[in-house]
Length: 80
Image 1: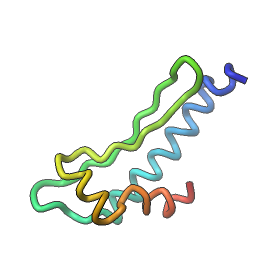
Image 2 (image 1 turned 135 degrees about the horizontal axis):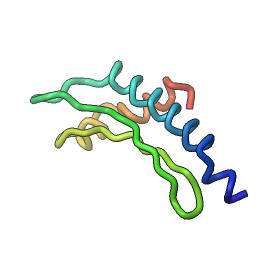
Image 3 (image 1 turned 120 degrees about the vertical axis):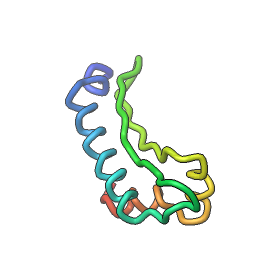
Image 4 (image 1 turned 135 degrees about the vertical axis):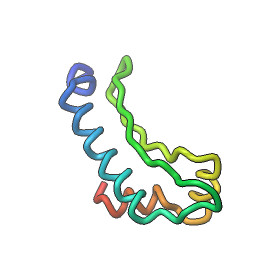
C-alpha cells in the first residue's frame, strides 16, 4: 500500500488535481488591494505518501481566504 501511495502516478494525479484547483482559484479570486495573488500547486513524495498543496502566494492571502473562501470555493469548483 505504501508503495502505491508514494508512486509517481499518484503524485502526478494529485498535481493534476492541484493545478485544477489553482486555476479555478485564479479565475474566481478577488484582487487584493495591492498586487496579485499567485496560485500554484506543488507536489512531493514523503516517507509515507505523495502530497500536493495549492499555495496562494501573497501577503494578504490569509485575509482573502477568510473573507472570500477562494481556495475552498476553488476546490468545490474543480470537482475535487
